[in-house]
Image (cartoon, rainbow, N blue to C red; front, top):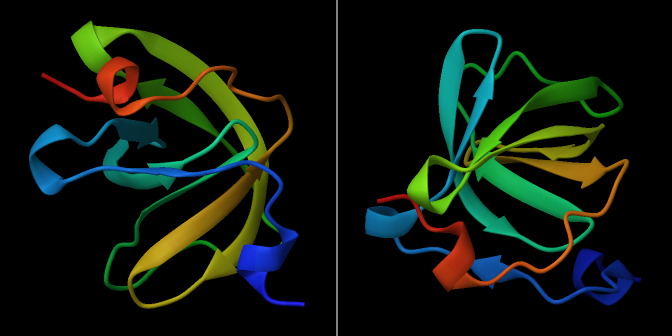
Length: 100
């Protein structure tokens, strides 16, 4: 079973000019895509994250709306870190999630 087949929720991807962000431990990361139950964000060149790590941070959405998030790291590669969220985000669309 591939990662795509395991996903139960559709993901919304964001162009670079309108990506939400995640604030975590004093750093801010660009969100690449998200669904109700997970998201991925751009990884730093030397990622401090490992599969299985607990993650908590602040999701920064359109208009400065902030939502605390908690989850578990499920994938790390050169380009991104993927999280499975402990609590669903609810409705996710490009219009409500983009950052101005």
